[in-house]
Length: 125
Image 1: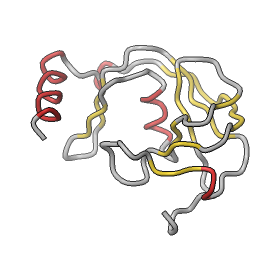
Image 2: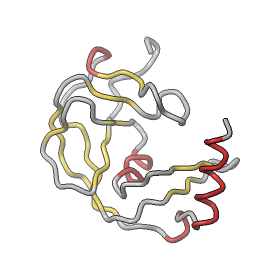
Image 3: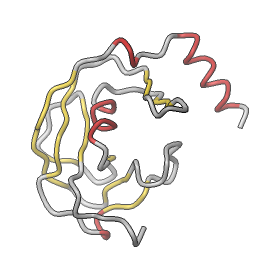
Image 4: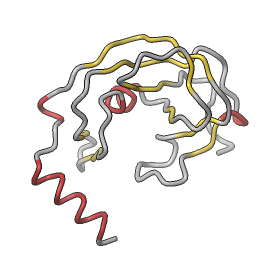
């Protein structure tokens, strides 16, 4: 994505304590999305108003990428179900610095019924 602003902050969310990300790790410029990823969801859903829901249930950490990112360092996730530019994969190991801890939020949690409905929609694509 040539028109992307790579100079903005990049984030990673994980339930693990990290100092460096491995090649192939996911990063985003959306801090809230990193917060959700820190809780290890297998499903992330957005409603028509942009509210986010997920099935992650772990506490975790938000990291900021602690070095400069250029276009050659990242590429859009090829299998994302999110909008273009929300989820990227890295081509080289990157240093990270923990900037926050996360807790689950009940208002974001998908019910079992909602999870099944979303999975059924994905399978019928």
